[in-house]
Image (cartoon, rainbow, N blue to C red):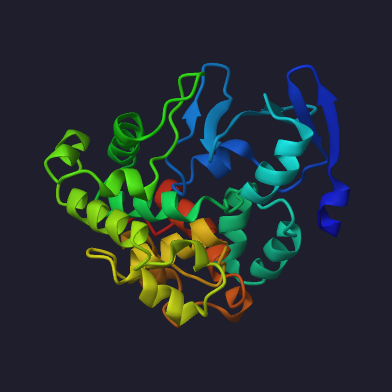
Length: 286
């Protein structure tokens, strides 16, 4: 673990572990800000989700962040990186807040962290997200896992491997009700399964090469490529531009992205995206 993690006190409890002194991390702000689509909010305010084969139920409590059903080893090997806990968000927010718009966005949702998801799952999720809304994206992703993913004993489903999806026909994907996106998903699965697209190497490839690798896939343009690299590979220099960010850039940053965000553009983007999408008046009432 990194030096930053030394500030987090991990306390064992019967149901899992509690992260104490885990600052700059709000569970709801992070999981409800439009970057992941498999977390479900439960009746007690917690969220249940999984990455790979590892399931987690996470709840913000007065004592810290409770991760139910998670062992020390799973936290160290999976969830520590997934929740980006080795990065100093306090320093990033302080730097961003030198700009008045970022200062407002950071103050509005200071607990957002950019998740480090599985690169293949992120690719498929953001293919599905094209010209789509959150509830429908979640429904398509859920059906994708239930139809093509391996079931687990606890009722969850693994995200389908590219090889499993590549064997399907376009007709078999109709059950997903994904519309035009089904063709893109199938092309992605076949190119990844065949090795034509090296999805597991995207985190290490030179950035332009990684973008070009993803854009071999039918239906993957620069926005989906940037989302995959940011949310699935930890490439925080990537800056996805959708309708909301396009409006924000036009109205709030007409001179371009401020210099204070140059080395963490993806994290800056997430603060701005959530701010302009959910805070009344963030775009001047538009």
